[in-house]
Amino acid sequence: MGVLTAQRSDGVGTRRAAPVGDRGAPIKPTPALRIVAPGRLERAYQARIGDLEEALETSSLVERGAQRCCDRMEGRLEQNEQHLEQSRQVERRLCATLGSLERENSLLRERIGRLGEGRRRTRQRWLAVLLGRAERGS
Figure: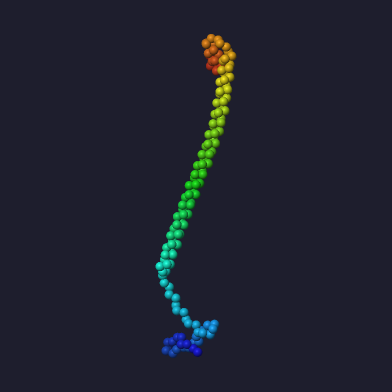
């Protein structure tokens, strides 16, 4: 059984066998698909995807900026810690120097005390000798 499928240019039709499916019934030709623009739901979905892409880009920029800020703050903290350690070392040296000066001062007081209760002028002279300020030849 044939189906008229096409017409030749001379007006005579040709017959071809109709395609048959698995069960022996003829297969109806499918209509050509029509391409249409996205509908209301699809447009809303695409708009939401666009908004999410913008939000993702913004969040990545914020994250990168926050990381840079964190790196700067860590660098400053490290510099402050180094400065603090240097200050502590200077403080320790100054304390040691102050202690040695106090000890030297107390030794000088003891030496002055041992010189006796001489005249004030003699005491001043001995003090000048101890401190290395005595005039030579006097």
